[in-house]
Length: 310
Image 1 (cartoon, rainbow, N blue to C red):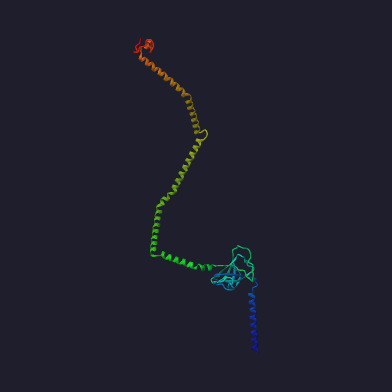
Image 2 (cartoon, rainbow, N blue to C red; image 1 turned 120 degrees about the vertical axis):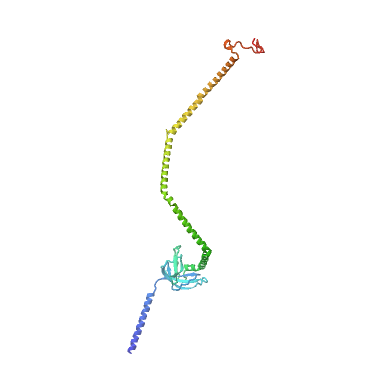
């Protein structure tokens, strides 16, 4: 009897402990957060996403996936129902993507917002509103996998062509030529070292020459300024030229006409002198006896056609 009593007490104790653990588990896992239902419909693959998966808003956990099934409104689409904390800022511009968590590959819903609207998406548990579900990075990668593989194959083919025996020989030749060119450049550089060493002195000489040219230019500028000053040589030369022009004009206006009259008078005198000399040559005795009477002309008394004097 005593053993049965001990067994009964032990059994009652186990049952009591089990009940207490169940109550503690319920209390620890209870969730009093008020959530709203939303739906997402997509034609993309949602591999890795399971019910009770986490819903995150820009990395912050705000809910969980309640159910995954087929959309009765859009044939062929997958319908995801989620419950989200009513304090989460779910706006009309909020959208969702399916993301993978770490290396486990477990999927979760990532919410984000492009900021184009500041109006909240009104919840309705009887007919939950729908949040757009866009392609995630994995979906885009899967769609581009064929293109990536084709490009990788093309790259591999081109690398094989590049590494062919003919191209390898050409590459070796090019490398050899580059080495020879580098050696030539080194030799040229060494040959130019003496010339480069003289560049500082040449630069100093050039600077001295430039300073000399600048000094000469300044002297020329100063001389030109002095020549052009009022009362300077050019100004005096201008006044002298004007005076000379005035003298020439006076000479032309007054002296030249008088010189012309003197020349005319001299010409008349010379003609008279010539006539006198001719008359003396014809009748020298005229110097002693005079010219005598004039020879009668035709129709006058004593005229002789033979030219004899009466």
